[in-house]
Image (cartoon, rainbow, N blue to C red):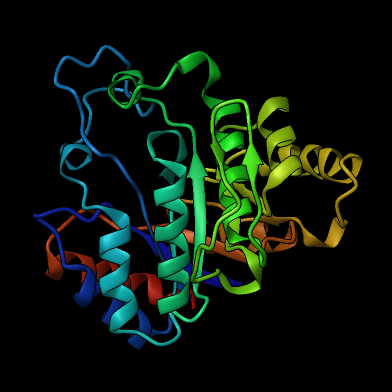
Length: 275
């Protein structure tokens, strides 16, 4: 099983360069970064984790800039977003960012995407909360058109693009795309329709959820062997990781604290025992 990591990198934590170097030196598989553009102080949406919203949410570094730094100082470490808030991006700009990072990293990029939980943040980006999932699907389709080998037009419900020259192209025609979110029929239908797999936060309930997702995947005509499930933001234990392996999980993403370098490196040393 590949052991990757995630962290809320901020202006107060270890830097992307130092973290990426330490991860690769220790033999970790990858680094995934979350995204929040801003947190309105008048927020009415409850924090899904309960209680007050942690400080790091309002200080998060831009994941593409940070991963670009990580790419420049590593050779093998895979890089990903966990997650990109797809509806908050212009899809033409995002397609270029993704393709550029994938190209410069030598094909090491995974696009983890999701639909968010903070209604106020999304509203400032002009997102209609009721249609955000359809909007996300439409934006991925538009990006795939830009990533196509030949100029390809796209005319969707929410956006369109003319047949265009758009280079570089991601390796393999598109990056690996994983969708985050809680288990449910709508999410699993979306994953089966246009993604490569699921990024469940915390990794609870997978014994029951993975078979349901596999049925949706196969009903959509997808190759049963191609489905990828990557538990995300996991606090590890030997029993937990062994259980994931029994379920066919090939990669797990462990949660690092949003802390300065000394504390993060101490946790990395602890996590290295699972490699």
